[in-house]
Length: 130
Image (tube, rainbow, N blue to C red; front, side):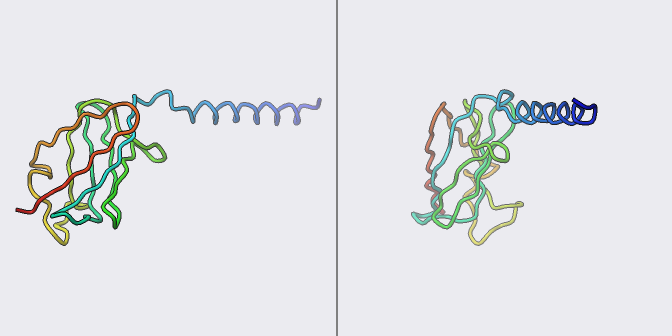
């Protein structure tokens, strides 16, 4: 085998090893899948951010669709959030007031706590404006 071909094969297989080991999920904590619905006065609330803040580590977030449903993402392409206790904050993106106010107890001033378990979790948040 000639040197350029040998070098090309070495580089190819080295790159293949780096790609396959770099894509592993071995460095992630235990995650639980989380989805649910956010409503305000019984109606779906679209376009709000739902954020789960674990006691330690990276938060996870999702945005509600037109039906009020959300799904948390831990990082790009990785769904879920860290297993264990988490504080939940529901707010309009970028701190904007939004078309309707989110009740204070559900926002950054509140102290809504949930316990995320391994596997699938559903947390529905039925907010009341009064």
